[in-house]
Length: 243
Image (cartoon, rainbow, N blue to C red; front, side, top):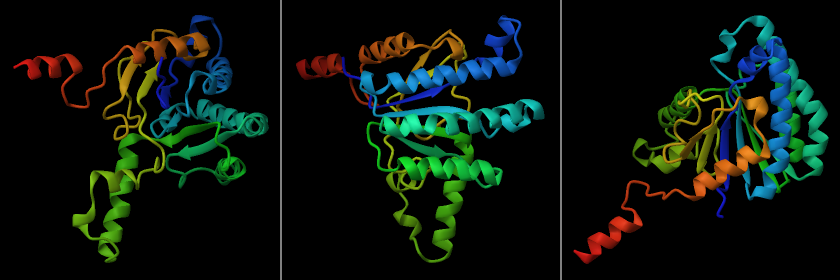
């Protein structure tokens, strides 16, 4: 089975997982962090080189302040508790998203995680934090427009490839597979540019229940698909050749 080099996951359903068990939402988020740990540990053994997770969207600030505070606290705990293990296991941490509005202590933690692990190559863990696909595209367009205004860039030189190279994910291949848990059937503003040709797998399980077996099943699903990128499939090519 050929595994995708880059898998992206929308980790959805923590709150509903907790509600179904009569637990506070924070319990669901804590269980979700454990599911993330297990997924990161499993990924290299399944042939995955890049794993991107949607940790906190730019729209999540609209949630109750107490929940936002809990999520920020969990991020701090995850990095402080897990960074040593990630580094020891050769995991490189990359952060995508807008850091401008983050608290200084959060920004410092994220930068420390990236700096410590920059030379690791067993797996690249990309954490989408304060991230939104539309926001990323707008920030990139503004950056390129400013370069054109300064005379540093010719507008005619802007191509799809150069635009992609200016996104938060520069240097990271586009995900071949995007997985979403909880049964929702949408991307929710996640990697809108990068997922243009990604295969999508939607799972009914809530994120805290996501396991290595779920990931392996999604990879098998991916392996059974034919990726055409707007061209013809193998059967269509054969029929066309026969005339």
